[in-house]
Image (cartoon, rainbow, N blue to C red; front, side, top):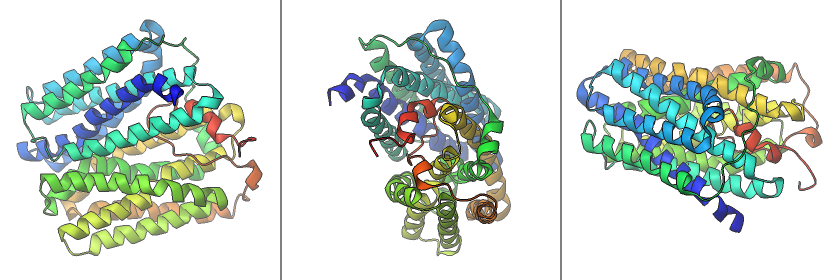
Length: 411
């Protein structure tokens, strides 16, 4: 407990950061609808966020090398707050897209600082406990952020001011902590080819996982509004999606550690197809929409973590950090395309078409997974890595979680 308390400033910064960044995407979607943006323009905002996310992951280690952890974090939170405050000063979809690039840089950069700090300060004995609390704070903050949508008025100065205040508040715990900043370590090299070499199936799976996660991050409010949900119900809709994903982590991990992970991915794809069919065909009643999205989160959210664990089964110990970064790169690529594509589909075929898009991705994953089973034998259980929930935050998350992936005497 003393160890966790010693890192409480960093974890509090993560929670405040998630409260800010987790609310801005759905608020932008609802604000865009109110201001008359087209669905394609709203989808562009989500794609712009992930472009900024990639830039932030890539550039923040170099920024930390020049000015240090605390100053880098301060600069990044200032960028995020400025982007939030500008929304109601310049009401234009292209300008908002640039603001979303800035907010993406902010969130990815701030997570890079925090995870780099944790990675440098944690010993192997402390790593599991502290990273568990860290991930709980991250997911809990994201869940509460969705509920904030119920009280934030779209297209209002007050709503964006609150987001800016939360972003600035994330700065206070980290810069006021008396703990010294760590020495700067080496940053992982980005090697996209490594993931393709180790597990092509994992690459396909993380891209498919972006279809659901990135789409619902931006286009979920558009879907909800067109299905007849009010603002409060949209906040429950988004929160239930994340809650379903959180609930699924334990059973998904249990299955992934005991069976061939390719079979688990195929099973998850079948569950997703069933959920997509139910969501696309069910009556357009509010209770059904909310129930279906919970089970949709249960089915789709574990895909990234299962794919990551499968890829690490075929990696050498020294490759794990670079492999995690490579998988996140492919997720970011998929996430840049998914919101814009889903927005086009909603415009052409209606709101339920986003489930058809996700379902099509999982059909491809299912068929490819079955094909890969014929190509490569199942790794022996003793050679497999431990399943762990893999946050999609920064390129250095693999180094932070590396000790938990190794099967050692504690298993």
